[in-house]
Length: 383
Length: 243
Ligand SMILES: Nc1ncnc2c1ncn2[C@@H]1O[C@H](COP(=O)(O)OP(=O)(O)OP(=O)(O)O)[C@@H](O)[C@H]1O
Ligand SMILES: [Mg+2]
Image 1 (cartoon, rainbow over the protein chains, first blue to last red):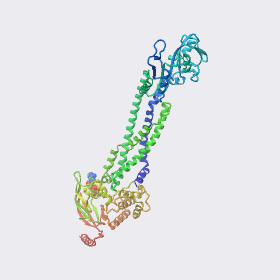
Image 2: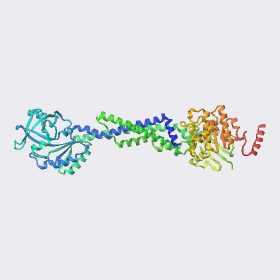
Image 3: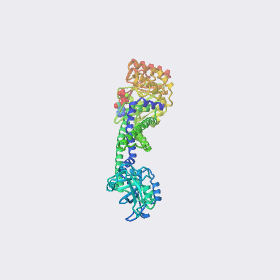
Image 4: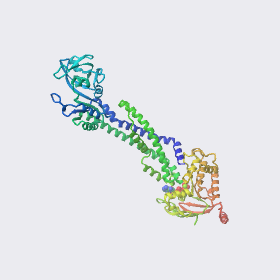
């Protein structure tokens, strides 16, 4: 009979139930959308911010002063392998090794040659503008020439150049072919870029000078990486590129604070609306409650009936609200960040909890209301 | 000790005494009408008898149990076991059918029994209205559902507050016949009315005024069990009529 009363009360009171459902759906869908977006905002926003370049560098213990490099001023191949392992994490968008050397071009002029990994370089430095193409694979002796360097040296795409290491033995030179020009408006414009492998062969040295990485998750995540890297390679130093990393962190904090305030306001409004609805529903159903009491219903069984009804509304409403909310989140995600929003189980649980909070606002309040109804007064028509 | 003992029952609302030291005994199987002008305390008295309200002082005991000393939960249970209530308004759960409105009384009493509920509705002439919602029933039909509901748990005591107050003459006759039948079946009946022809159908008529019990008259009905009393009452009445 309990189920029958409950079912009829829901099915035959479509308008009331519909109103209660609508409130739960509005509340939960907004919360689901906001929480989904905001639980992603750090990741998505910092990916967005990563366009400004590397925010973490790995340096040898003693950067080279003037003069020839020593073991202390280099990162060895062995260390590089260990660091590469430590950098293999989701919060690392991309990283590149960099090996710098002054080289002689076609036996006459000098320029700085940089050995690196092209595929990752464009991810660490998304602001680079490239004309022509990148060297194909990591062994290709292709050369990317900064626009300024190309102008000064009179180099063009497709040309072959002889690069000799800056050491006294000028005969140790190798042929590279220019595949493209690169422009950034910064130091890159004066450099030559080649794959690390052929550069190592040319210079007969496997060590590198520095590692640059693009990391998401702000200073906190950089600090974590620093600890892991310095644990596996104690001779290196890890440092944030302060200017970029700090302002990123501040921006993210501001966005999180704003989102929290927004979520709080929306929740408050929906909860107040829900309270008012429940209150009016109970007032409206006073006669019903009074009659049930006259017929011998205990408070507890009336409360169970109303609570079940609210529970069903809450569950249905939050499920629908969650569905609408994550759909909204995807729309926001695509329009603001150009990517989808990941689903987060924490959001689902939160939304469910909020649905119940809205539909059963303050269970004690609800119970007190029902308990206080006196059948004598109610059925006398005192409202 | 009488079946229902009302002793010096008083109910005050602020300075107003809605009921003022009412003392009355009602026997098992008796039909008592409560009459009096509007505001004289009829509903207040009935609510106290039904355990829907608590007195300011005085007591009510039913079949030896002092209901005015019970906790709310005990009262609810007592009402469930012993009392059937009928009101002037036809209170029904709006989203339940006639049948379900009767079954809900069974459910809160013990266990819902659809067949038994249907039989009860057939007895009040609503065999073809079982699955109608309250909004689809006439006033008279609704009141008959309420009567079927009051009777479904075989309550010994039926308390009715102006049960025909909102009915036309035809429906009044139907409903009064149902009460007559209840009385014949041995239920104790307390019926509030301000219609003297209805009040007259009882064994006794208690009249209230300003919360006071001002007189008790005999009615037209005779008590089933005690035939000797019937004769006496008959004589009493003819005497009072001749006066
Ligand atoms: N909850 C209450 N608070 C204050 N006064 C009340 C309350 N209930 C009843 N009264 C007063 O008590 C008195 C008796 O009321 P009651 O309802 O018993 O009258 P009644 O005889 O049933 O009248 P009617 O024939 O109009 O139904 C009235 O004066 C009424 O105003
Ligand atoms: Mg009244």
